[in-house]
Length: 97
Image 1 (cartoon, rainbow, N blue to C red):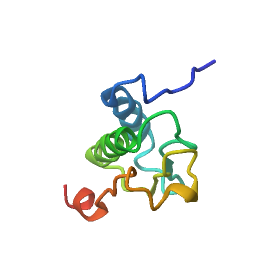
Image 2: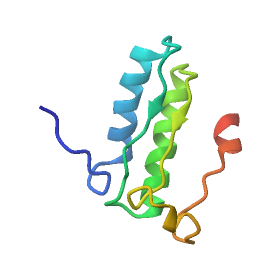
Image 3: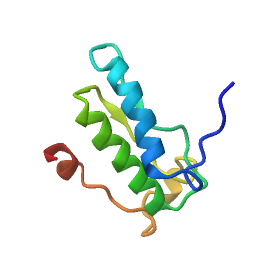
């Protein structure tokens, strides 16, 4: 049995390494999309943004082109989408890296 992933306790490189292994295995599967995490909530908005960016860049670096679902932090609550504590990732910047 697996264990809970706690991004407030795990380094970003461990999270990115998990996604590297998954993306390498599934890179050619056209019927797959990647969902980074279900309702992240223990880490700050900035911590989650850093972890998500590390995972996205790693997924793309192995050639996986599938859609990536990136939830908001705080249990993916829409109440916090306007919060100044939630960093805004520039998807355009991620696409051009």
